[in-house]
Length: 436
Image 1 (tube, rainbow, N blue to C red):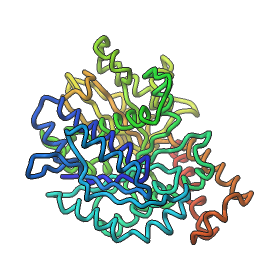
Image 2: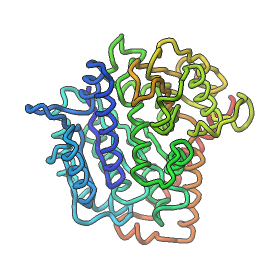
Image 3: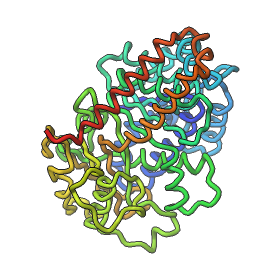
């Protein structure tokens, strides 16, 4: 079953390119035909000439990044985008969510829906969509939210997973806090699951784990694509009956977003290191799994900052609603994952039997002999969301930039409604740790 990716705005299109590169290169290196076939079936379609074409629609209100994507894939010659599956304009959204959602989205709805429909028709069987977008600017956040709304209207029975890039806390765009809260407040009611990458955390991974001294946007995007690839490549699930999972998005959502109030998903991966270190490093499943569990408890996506011991007691415990552990590599079926089934890791009203799932694949991922990825629906994202919400409230109280949104058709009540909805999300996740 296939996944159609919708790349939105500059960031969504840049990360999308790196993701498809990651998927293709990993499938090529997998040395198992069934693995490559399952990966290609999910994310690519093949032309009569044998070319692999990404199952993707590229949308941006400015043409630059989309043109760069076509140029890069043409030069590589290994896979490509369909030139007829893109849409751009000559004028961006001005880092304004309202401009993207209220103006550009409705104005271009018909052509965007038509592009997506044509991509869907190429699928033998569609499992759903992944929408990739940043929440800081105007097109990714505003148009991205509008497109997500269209997907829900047109394909009500398909799964929708949104991938959001959360902005640096120190700020990239003056109004990024407004844009972020508006995006989350609307998408939360439309999406089945929301994968979140925080730029601050990805930057730390580049600096402290990959030892990159002069970090570029390209470096950040490669880390994000690496982690997404570790999630989306073929796996054996509990329901796959000895075959690679076909209904991937359905099983993914069922495993992690089993309650409509809880849809935020964070990611942690071990190991993460410069590629030159990998041939000289030995990995063992017990240590990798133990390390990842510590990271979950201490609420960090950085394995090097965890302590040697962590207690399952105390107010700082990161409480989970659900966890999905994905193991890839040598001797994967011998790995003992029982430590993730401890009751203390989960909210009191969710049993570990229902809350924890493990998926496995014996094919190594991107040169790592063994790799463990944890996707967690937990309290991990309370702090960045709460910080963004607090700053958005402060700006609104000072009436800062409100006119920039109302002039595109939004009302102040629309802003307040998103603020209130985001507050409810924070409150719901805070209550996960309450013992009933």
